[in-house]
Image 1 (cartoon, rainbow, N blue to C red):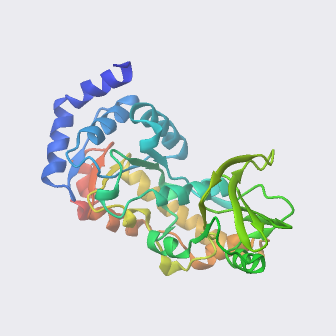
Image 2: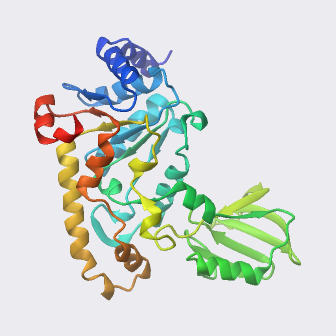
Length: 338
């Protein structure tokens, strides 16, 4: 047994962890648990111990850290303890949290991938999964999974595909035609070869046509242009920021299974930070019409963001584990959660 697994085993046997597991068993959808005195990696081992030992092992977990840096630190801890396949990161869409001038396409892609891993119910969930995020990322709404699924276009090897129709669809979905693709949202066509970088994939796709039939489907490295792996089918995902209306977007909390456990580092800080984000977004929206970025204009036109009270309302029907603060103080500040 490795040192990490030995420590995890010891935490799993701790009376406080056993008491937490009992509370979650008795109130799987509205438990309220306050933790005190945890330092550094103790938080990560406590979270991992609960995930590993909860009777409903397929239940989902969400950790809301205080900052992007803290979330990245906790993500690294949990990946080491639980394995990378069990831990997902949910970032914000911008190059700097709460600074809305520049989008980060890689993080937009990562948001989409994380949402796509959230199961509709626990029966289809993998064991012991947790999403790690922070206030600025939670501030932005996400596309409803069922809406996103309906908007995906699937291309299969051996089927007929009209290149002109494909161009029309890609433009409608927010893709830009370029000579060579290198980031999500781009496509190029050279003869019978269609390269496209979907908004929902880490690598670009290459579709090779023989007349109007899909002969091969592959992913490739945009730097070297070398093929990575062959595919039998692929899914094209539209631009999540511009393709969907406000009524097609919801809070991340809304799409988690009902018995998901929400771990909150500091609830008061979370609410204050969400209010700060809202004020900055409102101020930024006044000037967004003068910007060159059509994508930013679309985002702020719909105001696809959450109010602090929306988050409190979403949390009210969830099991919450508070990592900081005193229980009496939390009850006074947020009576609606207790």
